[in-house]
Amino acid sequence: MKLICSPISPYARKVMMLARLSDIKLNEIEPEKDGSNGYVAGDNPLGKIPALEWQPGQFLFDSPVICEYLDSLRDEPLLPTDGHARFIQLWQHALGDGLSDAVYNYRYETARPAKLHWAVMIERHDRSIRNAIATLEKISPWLGDAWTYGNLAIVCGLDYASYRAGHFDWRSVAPQLAAWHTSISDDPIWRVTHAYEMTAT
Ligand SMILES: N[C@@H](CCC(=O)N[C@@H](CS)C(=O)NCC(=O)O)C(=O)O
Image (tube, rainbow, N blue to C red; front, side):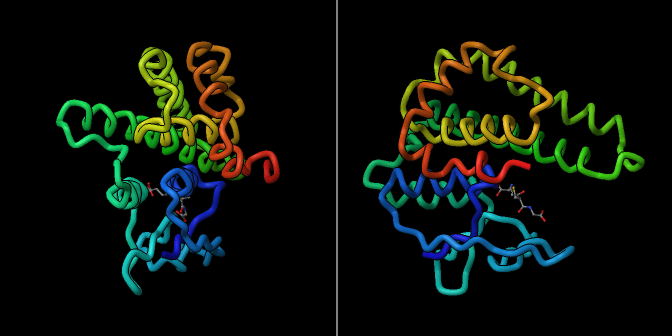
């Protein structure tokens, strides 16, 4: 299967990690952006990555949908079928993705020329980043040391925050979360998909 992706995208990286974790070999293709159309290579009408060609010429998106699909191919899916445990994982996954969303939005607000900055929106996204970190710090004792459905999104969100929202040193306000992140990141799957040092600008 072809995956249109880049490890810089926390959403795509999450999919790349799950595929490696599940021994699913994907043909990973890094697309070029096409102006205001975004990424067109994946035939995603929204112009975004990741997109997975799961049937010839048919692409799945967005990343939670791709993750559920890949997870369903596993002998033992990460996402529990049982109601409560399942929704805890989906909630954690959404929190990790939500952190990535806030960082992404913050980044694009602050990347504009200074005269176009909209202080209210910058503060709005910054607030979401800080609140997501505060919530993650509270739940960090329960996250566990395995790659769960939720943990994949949370780790990708945290790394993306370090990369694109460096104005906020989340480790200094969330020491338990920082310790958890350090221990779960000591893993080849984390290392081979971590592209930020090479490309940081
Ligand atoms: N909710 C989507 C978000 C995907 C997304 O925003 N991807 C960004 C890369 S990090 C993108 O493709 N941006 C290109 C654009 O919007 O032009 C998902 O989970 O897949």
